[in-house]
Image (cartoon, rainbow, N blue to C red):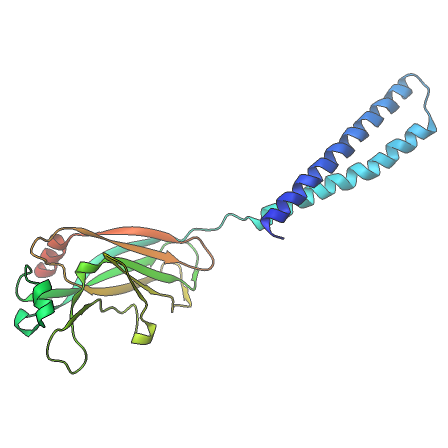
Amino acid sequence: LCPNTAHRALHHTKINFSVAKSTFIVESRLLFDSIRRKSIHFAGVLRIVKNAHIFVPSLAALLAAIIALSSTNPKRRKAKVSIVQSLDEEIKHPKDEMSEDLKEFYKDFPDPVASHRVQFTMTNESDFTLERPTLTFRIPVDKKHPSKYEGEKTWSRRSFNSNLYNSRQELRILELADTSILSNSNLPYWNDRDDITIWIRMVLDDGELKPFDVEVSVNCENAEGVTKKVKIKPKELLKLNWIS
């Protein structure tokens, strides 16, 4: 039963119930008046019994319609996750090993350009298991790191390497004007209180070390999803990484 059908059924049932209730009340009052006047008519009693047969099923139908409507529009549970960020594995990309296009793009960056694995350790705090969760990351496109194809000696392109996908067949990236969206739904479930660490390689030191946001979304089949904005502060992360 779809929600629209349930609403229509409830509306019509309310009308029928209201009519039956009104008739039952009127006939009952007439019967009680007759009792007070000691002039009970058998036809009046029959009408009361007949209307009771209408009123009681109408009440039952109204209750059934309300129950059906509530079952078609249950309040869904909402996923809840916590996210802790950290850095790992630095790679240096000397500009003299870059293609001309990349040299142009990174001309204002320190040389060598450094990239890091930015780690997002996420814990399921929903109090229930998430079924078939989909993890999605929206990242500023200018945080891509220099990359190259296997066997190449020159850094020739920019990308986001990540453990979010294990092969190029699993890679799902949507490129927008200033944002890249990385997504994966390979997990069959995510148990309550379990943590998952997803890393995405990025260039943090652009010469200015300005903070930026990464939008992280978790959606699943058995609950409403959740989206969080994670503030990446390069200066603090790089300092902590250097100390450690």
